[in-house]
Amino acid sequence: MEMRLSLERDRKSAETSYPQNPRDGDNLARWGRALLNLARFEHGVESKQMISGIELLEFWDLIK
Image (cartoon, rainbow, N blue to C red):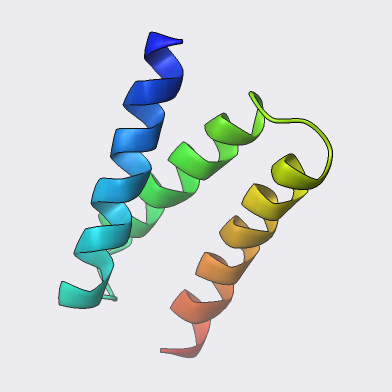
């Protein structure tokens, strides 16, 4: 449970930092890792949504 809370804090922190510097590769990687690891704790639709979020981060990074 503690790991999940830590990952959720990392996700929220990266999401908050994104608008300030959308081209920050380290922040995008941290956000993606947090989403991917959080997906392990979820089942079904929630897990797929987190993985889709990672794909969206990759897409936005490519077009900017």
